[in-house]
Length: 315
Image (cartoon, rainbow, N blue to C red; front, side):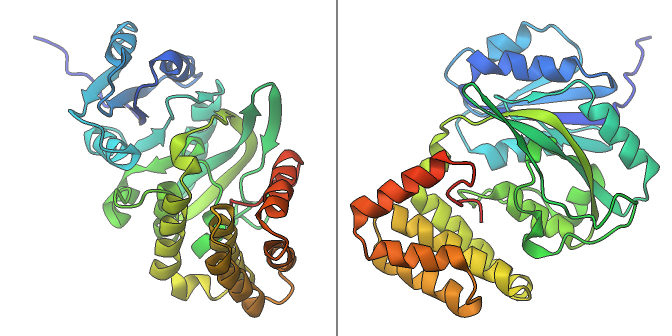
């Protein structure tokens, strides 16, 4: 009589699309965790390279391989993984990033020590761009080092990396899965929904190596603006409660449009930001730059991207 495989504590969902060259290292970083009670659900989103061959070369019974017949996007790939997950906790790993060895152990210990109302545990990360390694601080949602729970209201969850998060599976039963209609910010939009019903806990330690590569979706300004507008409309009643947050949102749309050359519409959004929050210095400076011509604007944008205080696409 065959022994029934016991249920793993954590399901690690790894969406992959033509990332065979780096996927091996991503999966290895999960297999090398100090906490070993997990399964890995790799969702091949219609790859045309040797992704399947790479995964099967591991020959590890904890790895499950699912393939989409065609490329359906990151949101649907992750949703496929969530549906297939057989664990109480779900983590997400990107195909080109790496976990540090103690990530899962520390997160599981935290979730198991806290009340069920804490649905998400997330961490800081190392942001790696070529030879440069930079500490990326995730947003400070909790007010102190003590275990004091606070809802992560509306837009305060921005800049939490999905690959740093460990989430109770029951959370998805409550709020649903990733919005596969959004071209950008699918992580942010999910975190906003989660924040309505669950508390977040922040481990103030970098437990992920995030490789900042030139991914095509990140350079598509139209997708970025569409997603920002969707979030602004969908959650406006929450976002407007904080004037600076609302101004930041208008600012993000404005500079994205200006970067694509649409100074007129972009300037309108920047002016909206100033009207909402008159001390929004970034918007004031950006409006002035739009009158200096595209060449000057682009040069200032280039300079801002090269210094530590990055050109703030992330607002």
